[in-house]
Image (cartoon, rainbow, N blue to C red; front, side, top):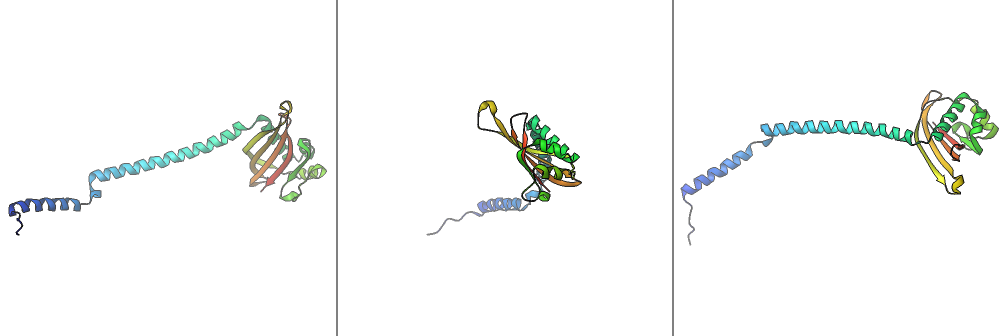
Length: 190
């Protein structure tokens, strides 16, 4: 059985179409003007996105710092400021007045047992001066009990420069009724 053959007149146009398609695909589409314009728009969009992400990160940092400061109760801020002021002045009596009974101070210089009472008074008199202090975290919870005498349990984390050495962190553990917080313990870290 013999297959019908296509006429030469039919094969030539089909072959020309195939050649045209193949030739059209052989051109590199990335060299076209439209592609180059799209590529430039993509670069500009990526640059704008990076700039927006940087601005967002900066705003987030500013908001975090503002939220910490705004979220700290006034008596916690006053206590932290008075505490650092007494330490910077070497006023051991003022530090002891802010301590709860049995309260202790812990730092590398005080040893693992920390110091309290007259030992703390003498320790404070070495004048540990903290500058550029900033509250970086503060939290306060209410301990369960009689609603008329609810006690607060608070932590205030402060960063600053101690005697000219930056990167110093202190943690004040406060407890008491609102307006009468006392220092349970104080930890200081270089």
